[in-house]
Image (tube, rainbow, N blue to C red; front, side, top):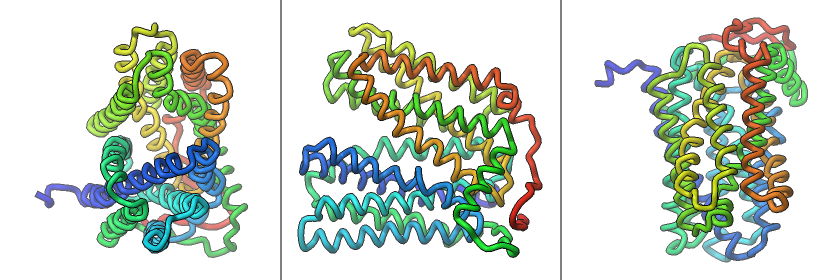
Length: 421
């Protein structure tokens, strides 16, 4: 049976078999840590700091990490990042056996875990186009979105079952299992290497500037990334407000809020699998823009639902989740196709930073204004902002035509890279 399977598919699914386990175990640990901080401190400030140290490494370091991803062996970077996360877990387990892990140590662990993830994620995204044929990138990114959604569905339930019966340090040990699961499949996969720059020394700031310059050379892609940042600013806070809207406006309970979260995640899971089977339209903008429009209309409509409209809320939240992969996954495929492999890590570093910074800024605005104008009205405003993103995608010519522009193969550069594939 394996003989009828192309080698690239065997490689892709082998890597992701380990990644699914790693994603689930990492999410279990994350949930357990947040619950532990909540119970021990009952402090919103501590939880805010925990969220901050979790996203800051990705937001701040990604532009510089991208240069490392492009200059050095991506497979080794993935192995080392997983190993570093496992070492952090081992240290916490040893401390936890002897005494209660302090809040400071937990926050430090969250920070170092986030650094490991900040290295691992762009490597995985940059490795995918080295393995997967161009025509199959969108399908594979759809499946990737589904794998990530699956972890979001399973991990809270597993964490909820484990947390009451296991000490925190033994739950943190799941990070070790996840690291092993991520590393072992990589040992059996040969990932094409890129010839290293031989003429100039490595510079963190220089590589970040190089990534920004390469991205800006494709004007449509550059503007699309800015639109993507605006969408993240609107969409992520609205999604985070679903449980609050459920209880405050619709008069639901935590069970109702959990139902919304579960159905949204199931929607993203199904959307990713549908994209994986279909592959999207030939012109990717014809897939992305309608999906963005669905999200915008659903968010706007949710904010205007009456207090007895909970069933419609459930349906619209599900449709929002269903549409999400058709924008986010397809946009990732577009970046992977339009940027030469030698520069992909640096460009992904810039785009990741844009998206990561947009989320906390949006969350800050939502927290500031939602209490004053109402959660439902804020979600409607998020929907209208998403519809503005749709209009920008459709009427900014360079963005609308970005998928029809040729891939730029030779960038003027500081170092001389050649793809050895």
